[in-house]
Image (cartoon, rainbow, N blue to C red):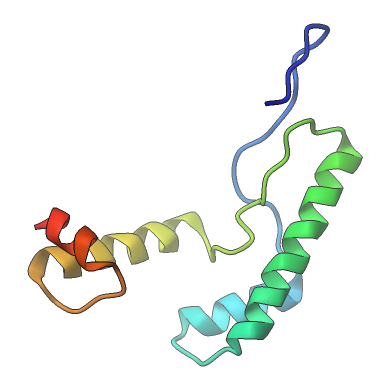
Length: 104
């Protein structure tokens, strides 16, 4: 863990602006359109490296991923709640059987 006895370390919480190419892919996913999974993962990784670099450049001591892989907080919560609702109702969903059993 990063510590300092001389000053308060800086960080931030929340989403940072995404590159246009990543935003376009996230919009397609939101619309239910197909996106090349490998290209999406590469774009997320490149965008994350970029925002971490920009945070370091700005003097942030403890950076984060800027939520590059999420379309937005609100749609992330909506998708997560849908998965939990599906699990509770017994419908097929993309979570493990152990998680499904504990949600019932």
